[in-house]
Image 1: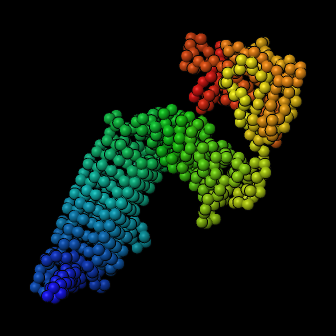
Image 2: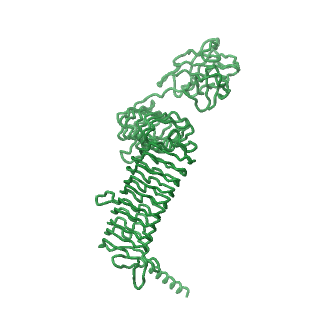
Image 3: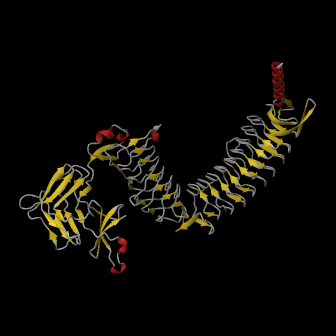
Length: 636
């Protein structure tokens, strides 16, 4: 019995399923039963070119309400016109996709228009009933005539639409449109590549999606409503006619490149906005940690705020900016932040901690000579692409990877200097035009460290003429270090370690130890003479002997500062000879902040821990000499 019962139940369920999925044809339209008294259109006769869908249809004694146009129901059909009754509330995805439709009349019951429902047709005029609440992704995408020119020149969205999907009106031919107050969100790329000149946005709108009005080149003005909270990435990118933008009080999020490559000369920030602040005409986040966006015209130079940590992608893309001064604490440069600007001057050596430079940051700019910072470990995709004024580029040891298009079309390039003996890796690329050096000047000289030519020659770096070049001579450390305290009985013995092997050029260098300040008449000298010898191939030993040939010493005074000055040219190598080296012992450890401003003391010299004079304070310990004769050890 149990077996028979299960079979009977299965048969009943199968019968119900067949009934629920049954289809029938009435006139030129095929319907699918979706409920006890409801159907949706599921197909049409290939010969049909114009139809008016009835609100009800009879089949085998049952009257059905036509509630929907099914998914892909009339896709690729020969229909040129259709009238949809008020009984239909849903038009599903791809309902008329790539049909020959040029005219559509929607009944006042339609609420939902699915993805690609009317995509790639030839509709020239569209009026939505007030009942429509949802317009899906690409719903009216790419309306075009027989010559593939945009043809949807008139659109009335009604007053009930709440959601407009991504790319819904891509390549819209209309020159104006009003977004109803019911709409809360405009989807990404909604009006991409449209011919819009004016757009009316009503109160109620909360979000403009990524690229919503991207490349609307005729759009000359737009007023963002007070209800707006978010402006998406590239929302108005390439809108060449756009001259001004307002940021309402409620906006808390703005995406990268929101107004990049436009003609915007003025950014107006609502005084009540708490998320952003204006600094010299440029928009920053409220804490000034991010430079968000800049006017594209009217600003030719900018000094980045001292609190800024990063420049947002596209902030100056396509702008008239010629010169920018980066602050010392900047960490990152976002995607294409200077692309296609007039930038010719930037202090990349200014930031002490910059560690990320995104793709295409300097592409198509006017830079001529660039020395990259050491912290980023790769040269990103398209970073200097189409920089036709770039003549020289220095790549530090820290950069170990080179990505596609990095130097594409750098036709004026004369030299590249790679400071690493290990060639930076050329990352994978697919076509010849993707290689990092495609169409750059193949006659440019690639300077590489001594002994590394073969390593470079066996890589794609052989695109250039490779010439070996010695590294500049640099001090790695000293012993004692500048800033240390002198020993009570201080030896006349000092070591200097360099970044490469060196040879002694002065066996008896004229070393000076000044007491109090450099140039003082009070000096110290060993009993016999100064000698220069090598502890190993990179470490110089400078020492003063007594009459017995041993290292001499002097008795130090803890209250006095001693300057050990090792002259230039004591050692040489292929990279040159050493500069003057200063080791300062017993510096005043009073913090710089305690200087009395009334004494008008100014900084005369700054030395790093290796005894080398530097232009500005370095991270770590600095030895600072002031005009009043004091020398202080300062920690930065």
